Image 1 (cartoon, rainbow, N blue to C red):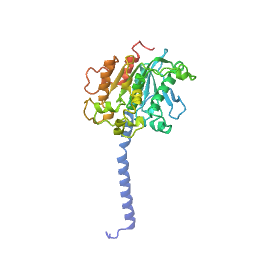
Image 2: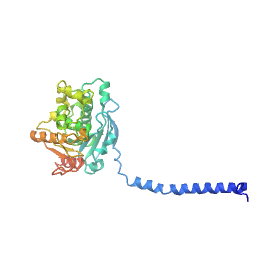
Image 3: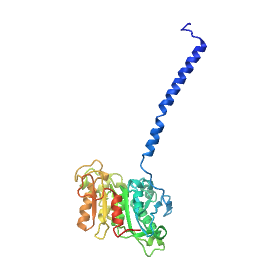
Image 4: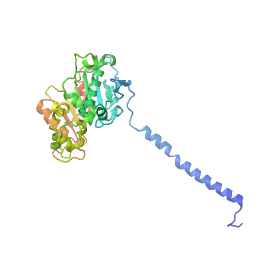
Length: 331
């Protein structure tokens, strides 16, 4: 046989054989991937349970919605009120599992709400000054709405604790320390409800919106100007005296009084007061200074970070369960 000019039938046979071998090799290479994918899916963290009620409206805006998980109980249940993070510039209620363990709370007879709220961009569109007023007052309104549903949802109006991360943590602390926003003279029955909390347990909280305090505690601070409609931290610091009434109204630290509920703060790194931080926006320096002030004021403030002393509760949900059930079992 002429090797340089092979028989055409033999040539087609060899091509077919090579193609079959390649195709078979690909199938064999693909086969192990299927059980690997199945195994990964089987070991993934459990999803958040399906809400009892989803996308419940508490206002007119498209972001005025919340999800509610109802704990099984014959008696009214405590409730955890979750405010998502995102710098008041993003985020959704679907991030609830970052801040609390919904399934654990339900098993302990504690119901859960997670809210959306209007963002800074919506405040700017509506020309609200300062912009931070919008997300904070939306959180207050959502809390009042939840209380207005207490009978239908089997909720104990008194025992409501807030949770959240970053800006949602700041919002939670603002609710915890602010005077009651209830308006008994309003024509709106929802506005009659209280905005006070039983407790709060928050993650990575900014405990002040005062740029001078931030700078003193953490020299490379860079957060907060957007809350007051300013561009950049230097401008924020330079305009501090002008906006001081806003800071006094919307900064959690400035609102602490002896009648405020206990709070729990958790951070991912230990503090270093007066030194630059890798993450100055979520530094535990915020926690140290709030704890100092709360202690001096007579308010209980638990602080957790890696290496912190005398830590009893390793997670916000653990703290919330103890505080919300301290008057006895709910069922």
